[in-house]
Amino acid sequence: MRASVAILTSRGGMTSHAALVARGWGMCCVVGAGEMKVDSIKKKFTVGEVTVNEGDEITLNGTAGKVYKGELPLIETDISSDYLTHFLELCDKVRRLKVRTNAETPSDAKRALDFGAEGIGLFRIEHMFYGEGSEDPLFHLQEMIMANSQEERKTALDLLFPYMKNDIKETLRAMQGLPVTIRLMDPPLHEFIPHDIKRQKKLAEALGINAQELERRSDALKESNPMMGHRGVRLGITHPEITEMQARAILEAAAELSGENVKTFPEIMIPLTGMETEYNHQEKIVRNVASNIKGLDNYMVGTMMEIPRASFVADRIAETAEFFSFGTNDLTQMAFGFSRDDTGGFMPAYLENELLPEDPFASLDEGVCELVKMGIERGRKTKPDLKVGICGEHGGEPKSVHFCHGVGMDYVSCSPFRVPIARLAAAQAVLNEK
Image (cartoon, rainbow, N blue to C red; front, top):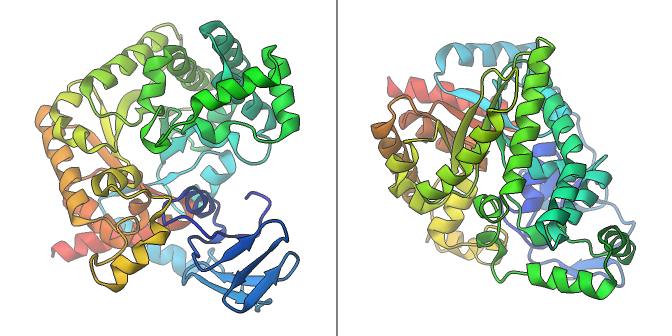
């Protein structure tokens, strides 16, 4: 994906992996083009009577979701316009919602700052294993995933630690003292299992096992429904050393920057929490790590509200959590029972038959809004000054931003390229009140 100019997929939806990553990079992307028939052996795809072979040029319109055969003339847009800058400054004088960004690298962070972001609302730790320079940390992550004992796992975590701390440190530095919400690892583990023979052999050698044992461990990780499987908070509960290492990487990075007179404000976010007992288990680990780090200034611990149950028990979670961030991609997925990676197969029929007014992964659905509202009300009943934000893809969609303003959120967070849209929508939400 990183090597591509644009991305076209035959599967997926608005919040599928390809769409999320491409949007964060500002890369043109069309997902879920279900009429494509891909022939990976002959390296071509067909749509009706049209065939596109490897090497043929195509043009994508990511906004309209159109694909054209051949090369169409393109115009580079100028985002540094003085008119745009002045207009958004007018918006900033009106809006009350803060606007953050979803970013994991210093370059993405700097781009978001140029767009007017006021912090990072979602730094996904697992995204450091994608793209340029990720080969070594990805290998150590794979060692950790395939480990068969706590000792093997800790060895891999020790090797992974310096890479993770450095990535976090440089992003905290780039944000110049603005708040950075760092989500602990939340990937389905099977996503990182190597499939090429050369890498499998290298991994087996590093673990001191043969190919058959590696295959056995790999098979043991397979899940029937990985999006609802061994990920997020569950990973930290079964293997507390993973949470411990991540917390140490974040907090040591912050403490070292403090020693360099660089102000930081990390917010550690525990994902996929549905019970206060889960949250408290993980928060205790983070606090224990923090107690042993000298020179640590400001930091917070909170949770990602993305399981419907969490909204019902938000009052109990808020007894210890310092902030809530609503992950509305998964919240929508679990509220509807729709797989966010597979909606391309049926969502068009729902929209054509007007069973839904719009794609709920693109704009917040009324039922999901009720879950969000309930979570905020119950959380703030326990803790009136509870910080609340949204970090799902809805954070950059105007109607959703208006809702976030209306329920009293402190901030929205979206991909860097959506920050100007969110700034405008947040200002319009204030004017709509009048």
